Length: 635
Image (tube, rainbow, N blue to C red):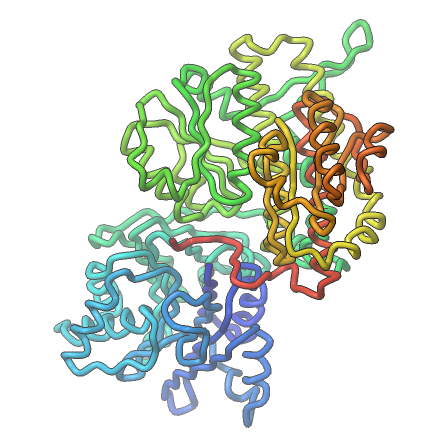
């Protein structure tokens, strides 16, 4: 959830670190800081720490406002930086990272939680160490210094290793020593960390993910759990396991579109990413949906090619059941995935919150397939669910966005959604990308096991290729949705209702509104409305029905009439050309006609736009809503 950036090389570190912190703002944070190590003409080393509460801009203003501002950082070729999301201790300068050791010679930045920090802190206090913050991170840097003092031949790598063996919890850290301006020690367990390799190994970049460093290098080394890296310019990276056995260094080339890391003229990342969805879904389908040359009758044929199904189809098709584990928006995509897989392959599917699955001692069999869904590929609960599944001998299948992420490396096979970096905290294009991957997976499995007939399969695959164009049609209604949003900034509660394929979409629409507008919203199966929520309905309660012209349409019209009879304020997402819907809803948001199983890819778009515009009308920060982080890498 926090963000780490580090640099060591020949360039000035400060501009690289601050730019990297800006790139990590999407992760959510409440304070920021930087540590710079600089050697003067007399070969004396200075370790300078700068911190500020609030945005990275506040840190910049503080540094720029200091006497001899540029001289303070110019010539510092090594540094570490951090954006903090408070866990231990309130947001404040004293709790902001980097933290320094008792002697002032060591500095550390840390993501994660050291669960036994209180015990360690008590032991260190008895040995004369003093603490100036409320954080678990300060305990860790003091423990490293203590370990260093006990070595006959002081070595930062050994000290970090010794300290980490005493820690319980999760961490991604970067540590520097004032006495050695040519080395950074990095380590991880349960929190992501990547090392960028510069030209000819003369410079290295450290970060929580690739986004803050990809403009400097595309060559990345992803640390695995319980690994420690020694980074020195002019040398190859050395990576050790926590037991000090040396590990192989695997450098991966990462392709990230730099343009996706900027707003591209849009006022917010969220609205840019909503508008990106047609092209993102085309990218997701590219190379996976195959359109043949016309046959003798001039007809094109369509098919799905997924390497995961081609290489592991036997295991997947013989699965006793699929178990989808995910959190938040990814869980909603999983609910749609359940319906798709069961509909087309007739293999039973369960959907679990990863945070519940990992603790409830689930019944698992070796012939189960666990599908882990995560945009970041670093969600802590989902990673823990994967480990539990592996312990029971299950095959693990990943659906992730971030190439090289922990979940991508931990799973047996899977599908990348390939929608590009998603910067807005409220997920939009990742959701539709995940649903699209479930669509392709379910169709491929159903066709492979004979449950999905050739003609129906081809009809569906062909229709799938038309979804991006239909999303573009919906986006042309944006101005109407923007105007409508002005009427709902007053709302304190909102009810989203759907049936079948659209019930998970109702959940997702409600989540989007909660996340960025701070309006309480509930998603419900429309048929369950009479079992409680209808008691909330009055003229002040907006009720949004997803009432597309598919299975259950007549019943959802009846549900709308029940709300209307009680004075409810009804908005409907409906199939274009539907005249009946206008007799029951005050406002109608039309979407193009598509087949039943693909409708979630369209019906969610107006809900994303509505949530966005309501939040903007309220003057809120839609890209970085309060208390939220993009990637939940701690419990």
